[in-house]
Amino acid sequence: MSAAAQSRRARPNRFVRKLTVVGTGAAVLALPLIGATSASAATPTATTPSTTLAGYPNNLDGWIRESLAIMAEKKIPGSYNGIYRNIIRESSGNPKAINLWDSNAAKGIPSKGLLQVIDPTFNAYHVAGTSFDIYDPVANITAACNYAAARYGSMDNVFGAY
Image (cartoon, rainbow, N blue to C red; front, side, top):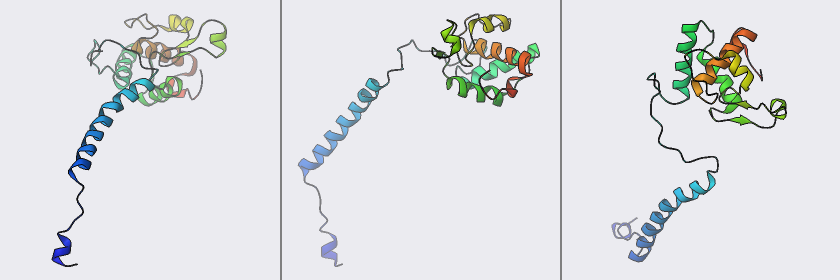
């Protein structure tokens, strides 16, 4: 290709360039609005602290690690992987999960929280030093692991509904 032909690149005119910039900006502004309308499960909440009172990250990893520390203190067996595997199966990591369709729910005692514990089980296997709120992630994990230890030897031995 000759040098003269190389310099003759097709350039969009000024009007097209402005429309592209304006259109891109509008799309960027619209995307959060589109996402917000489809996020029906999200509920407005106050900002949550980034750490728990015990200093662990206020997320699934931190809740499991805090529970494991309490469990070690109370001699309740269980591993990070066993707890994590069961949480993901039971609630996908949602501490506010509630099962309103199974046999427990039909009896009026739905399974709740990260490890889908029913109220009577939570109350019977509650671990001292944790919250009495079944939706509290650390209390839910620790009580469920205490129950699993009594019934199956450890949460590590649970591979299905328990």
